[in-house]
Amino acid sequence: MSAILSVKNLSVEFQTPDETRPLLKGVSLELGRSEILGRVGESGSGKSLLCRAITGLLPSKNLVPTGGDIQL
Image (cartoon, rainbow, N blue to C red; front, side):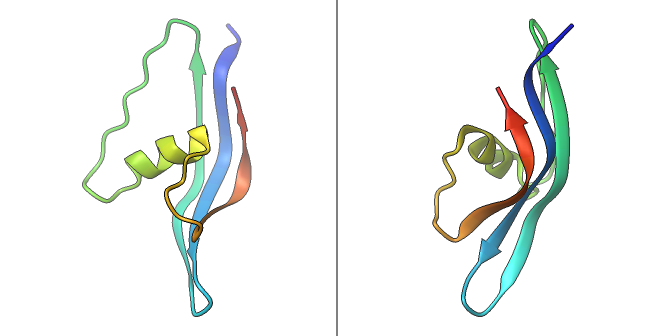
């Protein structure tokens, strides 16, 4: 089965002139047709950030994808 969503080694950082802080580091997943994916984690673990990075809707110019590949 071919993947309809493929995320490989995705990384996102919070960047300011004073600091760079990694928020997501090396996230990979594949989702095939008719599959359902659930992300579970503690508050602040990056679940929503991952979804926003995949859709290209990061809420701040300081949140920057710094690596990885997303294919939809």
